[in-house]
Amino acid sequence: MEIIIEEKKVRVLPIILIICLLLGGCSFIPDNSYTETQFLLDTVCTIEAGGENAESAVKAAFDEIGKIQKQVDFYDENSTVSLFNKAEANTEITLDNHTALILKTCLEVSHASQGAFDVTVASLTEIWDFKEKYIPNPKEIEDALKNVGYENLVLDETKGTLLKKHKDIKIDLGGAAKGYCADIAVNILKEHGAEYGLINLGGNIVAFGKNPKRKDGSWQIGIKKPFSDGETYEKTVSVENYGAVVTSGTYERYFYDKDKLYHHIIDPKTGYPADNGTSSVTIMNESALLADCLSTACLVSGEEKGRELANEFGADIYIQ
Figure 1 (cartoon, rainbow, N blue to C red):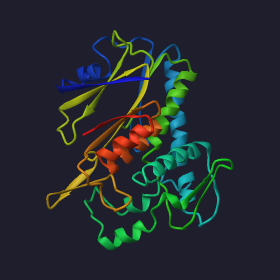
Figure 2 (figure 1 turned 135 degrees about the vertical axis):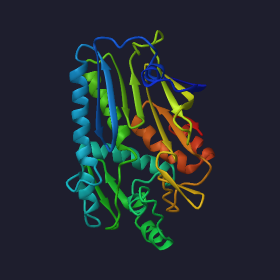
Figure 3 (figure 1 turned 30 degrees about the vertical axis):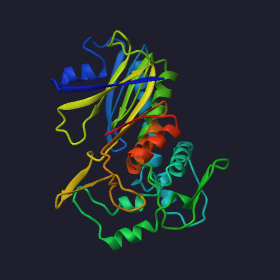
Figure 4 (figure 1 turned 45 degrees about the vertical axis):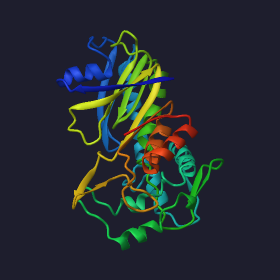
């Protein structure tokens, strides 16, 4: 994998042109390409592939993402995640293969980041309401913090089970599932003979193969400037052959109260939005799942520790 970051500041052109610029150039899409967009994982998901079986490949990828969503959906009472969240303490819950693989990486990043990324943060995120601009009171946060801590999870990879040491511990895979699904989509596209592909699952982007819309075959992915009006981007990531680019930003969901910014990326240690001067973290890696987890962990950790953490996992990082 080769990823190059170039500094840019470009005005956004009409929508057809900006797609051409960011995703490859101004040549026409080849006849053997197929693109489809669906709303899954609580976000807009777009998959493009090229090759003789491009359409069937894309549809197969979306079918698998739909199956994974049913297992990891925090709000679906029949999902693996919900069944675990409702379980009693010290009760082993059998995981489906997808959930087990996601949790393995989640816990690795949780340990390495000393809890800056924590899959048990659900008790905190539940009490914040960014749509209604609700700020929990200190007592609510104090109570929720008692139910946060990845150390309370025991994953048995051999048996494929997960248990929690305290009944009220809850997991939420929202900070990892999109990355994992992007990785799975790549595998399925390749299995169906796709010559190239571009997967965008709510900002979790993976590209592989030669981009037919550029002479050099590279994929150009723009990184948005935090809190901009959407009319400029300042960085371009160039992906050669294969790579994942994932960004976490405080500008995605937020509100102001008395001139103070409250955003949706909660620090599992304090119970409040991360507040260290970092607005956006982009991670580039071969694994979109790892990049998804790391982007959150590095944003919560702050610039110095974030760079150290990315380096520990062999990932490239860009911080704003």
